Length: 77
Length: 220
Image 1: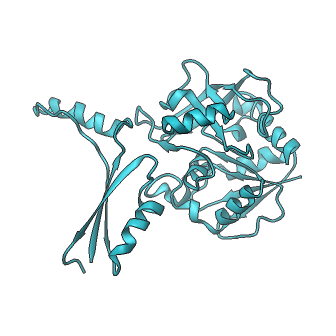
Image 2: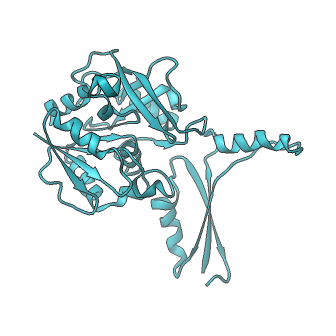
């Protein structure tokens, strides 16, 4: 089973990477970008999908400052 | 009295910490894979890039065998200092409140900073006066300390905010200019600036860092 974990800065916490990207886009001619947030993507092939959430709590994300979302995908290896 | 200084793959300030500690007491390095703290009376988790700082700074080092012993040592009241990456490791281990985030300006910055002592009664600053200024170098790119409002209020009430950046010195964007915090019991302390680099006026800009090590010696 392939699991995809999306990790983002918690809402309300300043995300300087997102801000830097947001400021760069108009310079390239892209207008109307209202917000940008930069996070991390972790992809895992696991035997037991139930372990992914505890992995997030313990290591993959820091729940004090990050939100995470687990997506379970078919296939994988 | 003996300091134990942890050494992870990727640590780079452990020898300076060792030499700084040796100016006030005995000190010995402890390799990350060891569980034996070698009879140390106080532990220093040093600066650097433990395990490459992969994932998040300090996230993987927090599970090192030596850290498991340090967590137990701290829970029994043992004196533990985390400097820079060591501060990040102690936050990841939940021995200290909050988390360290990338500097607001997204830059690695190396400079001398002026700090103000906000709590002079504790384990790590008992040789300082309240409001005293310490001049200590800082060098990091992940030093923006953050905690939620409720945590911050509780910390403020129990005197856990030990050091602040003086006015105009908060280059990393830390919440409320906070540079160093301790746990509720007062036996674990972390800060982003490097007291171990400020033990000799010729190279550290001041000797103010020695006050931290002397305080620990008195407490341990």
